[in-house]
Amino acid sequence: MPNIPLFCLCACITDRLLVVSVLKFNLFSFFFSASVSSSDLVSKWMGESEKLVSNLFQMARDSAPSIIFIDEIDSLCGQRGEGNESEASRRIKTELLVQMQGVGNNDQKVLVLAATNTPYALDQAIRRRFDKRIYIPLPDLKARQHMFKVHLGDTPHNLTENDFESLAHRTDGFSGSDISVCVKDVLFEPVRKTQDAMFFFKTPDDMWMPCGPKQPGAVQITMQELAAKGLAAQILPPPISRSDFDKVLARQRPTVSKADLEVHERFTNEFGEEG
Image 1 (cartoon, helix red, strand yellow):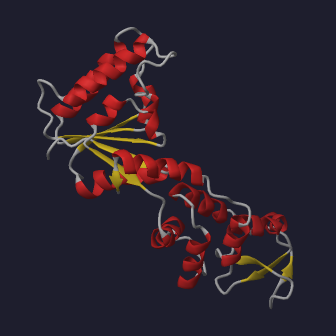
Image 2 (cartoon, rainbow, N blue to C red; image 1 turned 180 degrees about the horizontal axis):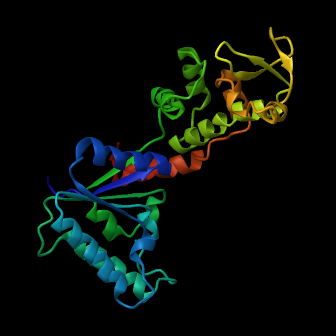
Image 3 (cartoon, helix red, strand yellow; image 1 turned 90 degrees about the vertical axis):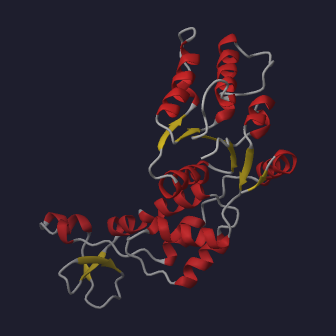
């Protein structure tokens, strides 16, 4: 594997962590990988931070083929020469630049991958070290549709293919993280319905499911009353429905603004490439 440092500009953390997961598990499942943040490489002791950076790269070389993933690299490698930059910060950047250059070392089987949401905050020398600067945009219609299915997983639901397509249309501009948060909120809706229900009916499997008063076989009873009768283990929340998603999406908004996307696209046009 050639040494081609990759720089990912992503709209949200879920999307870039997904890129790392694909590399690790789908492409290089037998590789050694190290995922670090700026806090992992910064120490209060003089000279210790540079040693941590050097040890990280040496460990990757010793375990090659390997991947080093640095998340939020802008917090570690901001513009040099700024007024609030400390001597310790400059030394960390210098060591990282030296290690990425690979002078005197064999880095042919070490892949360095980094991600950020603020590409213009990076030092230009760090930017040059990354041969590929890839923009990972927000998920498109088909991707959003698939994400809803993935996050729901095996959870019981009665959504149709048309429902998933409609949800994908409604979430235009949502990031992978936004969709994940949406589904997590939806997963609580059956629990809320069960807690607030005043009527339950008994299923053929001898389970108690919340329902409306007009449901055939409906019994006016609450979850607390069923639990008091020793039937707590037989209470079954209803499957997730389209109305649960409608309720959550009515109050949820995307977290990535158009201004953020314009910055990412401008940086891609100047220095990067589409992912």
